[in-house]
Image (cartoon, rainbow, N blue to C red; front, side):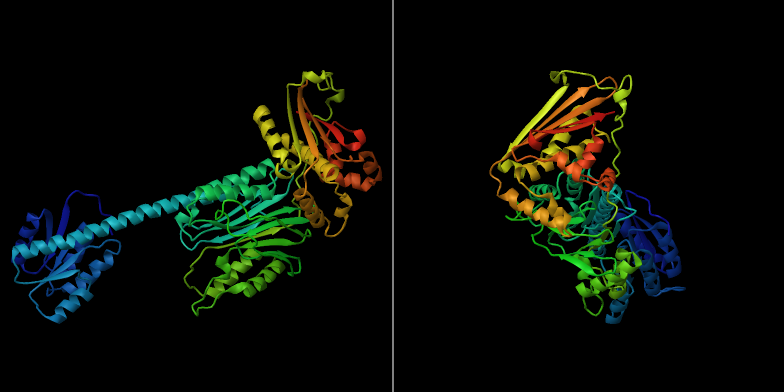
Length: 574
């Protein structure tokens, strides 16, 4: 079919085997502003409709070659995307003629004889309906274009920036063009991986209003090293301020630490989050403990992360309710039991997401999908970020890279912060310090090692110095979970204690040096005893891990004093 061109006048097609009737109707139509074409049989009328795409068709019923009913059916089949009003003009004043005209696709019928005034009134009436139909179609097309743009933005800008797409299975089947589900993955500075599966209220374009600020907040805060709980608090505050009251986000957050062999989970309104072992057994099911985000101004009192131990061969699985509630033509729901069985088969195939989605599709038997379907499967192994030792670790003996003896006051700049009492439990100074450093010295990969050093020294001062936690807890099978819960408990009760952090940046001849000094008010950390007790094998492993032994490898100098309650580390920056 030819594509109709935009025009500023209306066309009418008169199909009648009577030349006289064609002339009479043409005169009346021209008086109403139409340009008129005529045809004397149904087949010719179909051809002319196909060629000119008129705005109105007047059709006789009894004609040679092809009658009006058949011509009307063919014209209507050619005009599925337009109303193409078609009026039968006939002398057959019977109920059967009226019924057959409507069934053939006619939008009205005029029975001769009629006056010119009645004819024109009929034309104006049908054209008014046609104009309204065109306006609705135009609005639908504009809405479709907006949805396509939003989908392109979501897929191309937001979700394509996800971390480790080659290892993390992400499957999404939207109920409409644009899904209200969002999947985000990002890597923390220490190598941990953060994952978010979100489900905004409803689906379609409206449900995605918060997607962009959500993605930016998640990624930026993860990159700066904020804890998962701090990210969740910020996202809840942001969505509460931005979204209308009837729009909110059910979400499951997971942070996986390969070093700690631990997964930190927060489920706010989504189906259970699962941890499967390599045999397909369910090790953990983390239920929702909080209403969706954006509903209340602050998280519920006592809100906390669930902490579970994971093995390198485990997988964490997050899913939206669209999977559980998917239905088949018989009215049955897919349900939790079918999901768990499909996921178990998926573990054996090493393709959990694809296996579950395929099983859901088979179950639904082509039934209408009423909600967005999403699933994320994350392996728990090898989320250890390769840490490069300081690129300027050797200039000590180089002619232009050695330390320059500068007086203490010779630092280019100094940044200090003192946290005490309850503030220690509320404020994470590491992202704040890193943000300041990057504001002053610019961004770059060189700050990742510094983040690791600063984090380990601060956590060491807080956990062991102020809170008095025993690192021996981590030696147990569930050690990190026990350690985390004990830490949370002591932080909530914290009313005294102090940690001082001081950063001094020196410009050397060919590199820079950051001196990090941290002092706590606790009993101190017996660093020398800790090192002496560590075996050679531990020291070797520490090169690819975290902890104070890694800090020693990264730093040019590391020295404890005052019984271990004060430490100074020097880090060279290329």
